[in-house]
Image (cartoon, rainbow, N blue to C red; front, side):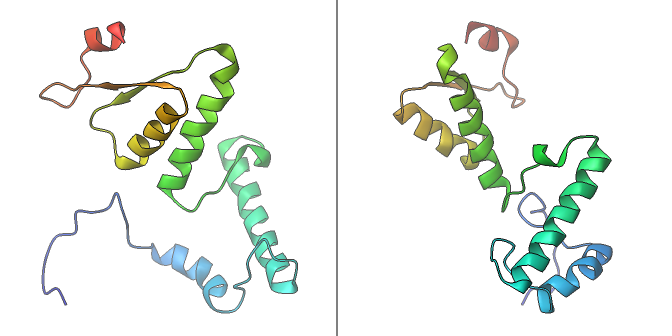
Length: 139
């Protein structure tokens, strides 16, 4: 067990706010159904997810159908990268630019797209971690 330290991994996991824990507690102990299941517990969980989707959509000023919930950042990034690539494939635009400093959650789907015929270009960064404008223009 750690005695003292400074937690610097907030990009991976963060503590849950007390208000969030209070709101979610019933779904951890009593209303724990799988939202995709057809039974009573599943329906209750499904209704809770859809209610949250509606509330979030209202707050963002979008329709609920525009929101997709994922299990985390890696799934969301895969969905975004593959979705954009396949949405543009019929246009002939199959050139993807990726920063050399990208997270594995971007690099891995980019490699998978390269294996499927997309041209993936890894752009170098300068000493400040930025892509020089001329490098971007040439790409």
